[in-house]
Figure 1: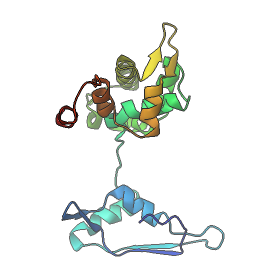
Figure 2 (figure 1 turned 90 degrees about the vertical axis):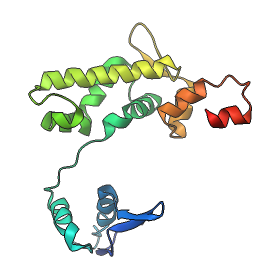
Figure 3 (figure 1 turned 180 degrees about the horizontal axis):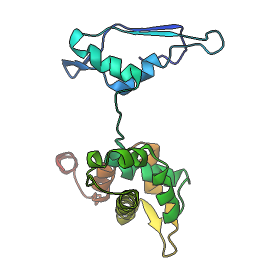
Figure 4 (figure 1 turned 90 degrees about the horizontal axis):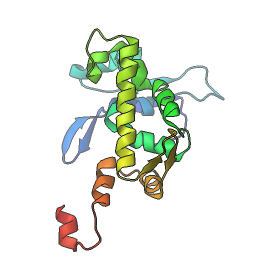
Length: 195
């Protein structure tokens, strides 16, 4: 885990790991990252990845490796942080670009294929999904603007603020930035820690 070098053979000797004092399955993304190291483009035309796991989880990993395991997006849970980062990077500089950006995401692709996973009704069509994702995008832009992380003018232009740049640079969650904005500067340490 964490090795950034290609290898002809990758062996994952266990799919379990200790987290906070208990043993649990490694995440699929961690496993895919590790087996993705198999193959040295300059030397190999093929490579091997071996996953050692329990009999009970064998089918799960067989499906994952054969591409039969469906992976869903989790972008909708952290959309506000990603929008802010894209604004800071100047990928998004107006509302229309934000809406184009969301249509380019894996979230959009998966929402079209599995709308109920993302809280949309089963019979919703492409235009309905686009409308819902646009509404979600606009809601998040408004949230960023409401606490001064971005500036939106009447002409739909968007600019990051210094607070928004700091949020993106240090990967601070939106809820944490909301709490930071409530700090008046007169609080003592006890007040800051308890709130």
